[in-house]
Length: 278
Length: 313
Ligand SMILES: Cc1ncc(C[n+]2csc(CCOP(=O)(O)OP(=O)(O)O)c2C)c(N)n1
Image (cartoon, rainbow over all chains, first blue to last red; front, side, top):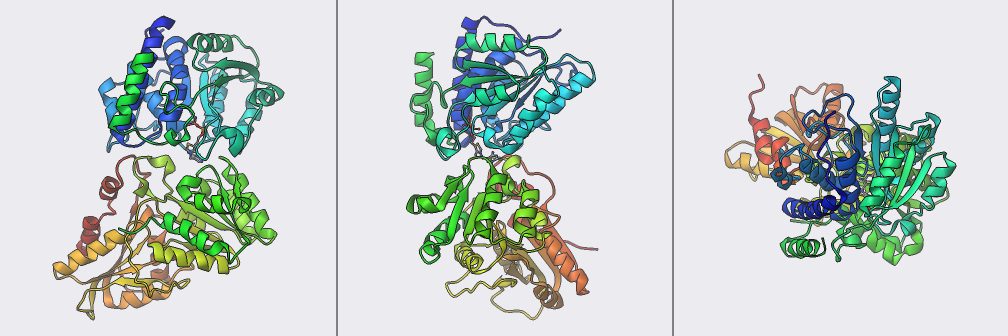
């Protein structure tokens, strides 16, 4: 079975540091994009792609590969970075983000970038597609898993709750949802704009398997993803407590950096800080 | 360069708010983009934040309207039209006095790319009974269209730009529902035109550039601005078909269902003996700068010039 290289957790720490730098640089080069929500999910994506995903970056149509859907599509700079690091395309291509003709669209586009399983960007649609993939795996008796990443503002969409109801009904134990719970959206903090708490209580009441973790602790992410694979009969919900803009002090929990590209000066400052603390 | 029409909308509701205490504003986590923040700050009790939950917001807007409020329900145009069933029932079928404001229309938004680009909204909205559909071209027209919407009892859809727009109307301009207006003619006011260009929304400044370029080369073209897409000014099509060799339509919308379709419907129904050359988006768009996309997807001035001159045989 083809898998990507499996680094130790200590190496992953260095890798996620470098990935943060790439996220900052690619958004700076694009002149637009979403640093906050990208920095909050990069640790989760790194552990998922390096340690758990059954995939082959050189064979993106392999029928038995695990599926990943970035339902909060605006955070694609993080996804593109992890994909480049794991060998889907050369790292240099990251700097073409959002440029004319680039496969690295402003939101993930499966028709332009091999390895993207579902085009997203309109919030709320990803989990339903993930349910469809998980249903297909069951129907065809295949053992691939489907992972869906949701934003905590995104779960305000009604369609997400239709999906939350459906997945347990179909017994989709091959489906794992990871909630990027950073309490930020655009107009303000999630708990003021439209409160969603407590998600774990709600999802438990919907008959999901529940885990709560620190979404920047690589070991906790690793363990949670490992445990999710052992659950039988239920879809799994991992609530990952995260920090929007994680790793760059002036971006952390600062809504101004939801959808703003850093200019050179801020980008340099951010990179210096990431390297110093990383 | 003048303002984005979304910015003019934000100004308009501020100017109308005191005279019309029934005006309320609903947002879905995009108030910075739909330009409703000044309203929210000045009139917090008349502003409702629904979070990322557009269909609930639209339904609640209808309920507010049914109890006498004048709700302005705002989001990106693509996220409003994504809730077509809710709009069909809560706005059109119930004939509520709801004002749907869709900003960031078309490929003119640029780098954010396909998922954020409303390109099919005019087709869907125009097909709804009891829905007025307006796409103003500049700040002056936007403000008057908003004032008209407040005075009008019924559902209205306003389609607005992210990008800044040139001021194409003079200070004396008077908005009239259902009327297209000539915004540019050659200085010589010819009796006969090679083309009448109907334009709406984002590419209106490109249509003006094209007409000026054509005049410089000795070809006569006028530009007609079509803000009112439903009801549509069929008479303008009849009138200009008589003195023009062709009609060219330009819009930042799918080639199906919007301005071009409205012009063709009028021309066919009234047996106008004029060819119609439609310019619009034929795919989903993509990420790039707005200028690059207008060029690539054929909405920029050189493409409009070419459509006016192209041999149609
Ligand atoms: C249906 C829909 N409505 C609105 C938007 C605009 N939008 C893009 S990102 C965002 C906030 C997302 O918040 P969250 O899901 O918490 O993501 P994060 O804060 O982690 O970036 C909004 C409202 C959208 N993309 N889709």
